[in-house]
Amino acid sequence: MRFALTNGTIYSGHTIFQHQAVLFEDGHIIGLVPDDQLPGDITVLDAKGGIICPGFVDLQVNGGGGVYFTQYPTLESLNTIRDAHLQFGTTSLLPTVISAFQDKILETITAVREAMQQSPSTFLGMHLEGPFFNLEKAGAHDTACIREATHQELDVLLEAGKDVITYLTLAPECVEESVLQRLVESGIVLSAGHSLATYDQAMQFFQNGVTAVTHLYNAMSGIDTKQPGLAAATLDYGQAWTGIIVDGEHCHPYAVRLAKKMLGEKLLLISDCAACVGSDIPFTDFGNFKAYYRNGRCETEDGRLAGSALTMLQAVQNTVNMVGLPLDEALRMATLYPAQVLKLEHKVGQLLPGSAANLVVLDKNLQLQQVWVDGQEVTLAQK
Image (cartoon, rainbow, N blue to C red; front, top):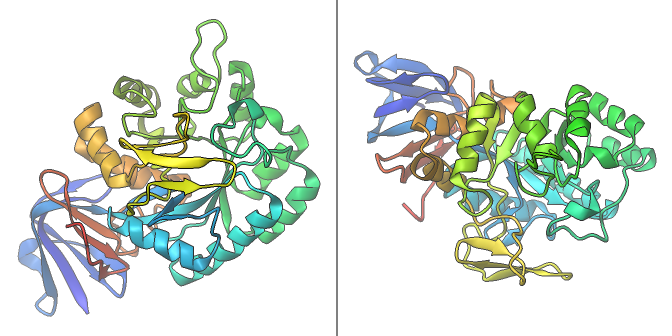
């Protein structure tokens, strides 16, 4: 059956359309047509004057629905996480595995592979955040798991994670040059994070194949005027895909605006969300520490940030209302740009002929009204 989503302002990716409809069939976008040229044999869906855009794409999802993926690495967990984030407009994501021992990482790879086969437009691969970090910037990660990347471990991970591990956060200054080069050649997106790299080191890494930066400003060397670090190099270089957590906790709105001025279309939204999204659990117990959810924060008992309680819907709302960026750019930061990081913008993140019919409808106040995945409408509990 063919559908036409009409009566809304369409943000297709690069362009804004009025008086047009999004046509989709069999889970894929057919195209955009003027409202007065709709085919007769089509089911018309009313956006009620709202905003029609691609479904959100989140490159850093630790959990949701009360489940932390690293802790429970199963297909069932991933489906729970998916369902939780669909309630907030995220239709595509990278399940994220925080620093863990090799056997646990192998379990997560198996689960993500199953999920990718089941829902290929939703599960785009896996983000391995760690364990190759600088111990001094471990954040809430288990320091017992943090270790040096060796060729022996890569033999295992690259073989097991072929076509599954698509994004890897590491501290490049802690990785041997030959290991880093091997990772570059693997095709995995390499992102600098949890790092104490100097400015000069970071610029060298960018030149040698590190193409992204994880949660700008957080868990990294900063913008000290005498000893600038990774954050300063990221802003100066300006060409690395850079995720940022816009929750009002991880960085000040001014810092987001500064990053936008310096990075332009390379700055994108991530949630770095914890298990609390879509759940009322008060904390997650990791054994070595507990992550508490209180006052809009996800934090350790002593108040250190441990991921976030953010959704991509809130990230878009905050980017517009708190930071002051235009809506069309905020939407691109949550859709097109993260898809481009993975070179999947032909599949998700835009409303193009042949792309997945993953759609979101917002009202004028940026409240979620409709979510569609592969041409199927999601029942919204929080509408």
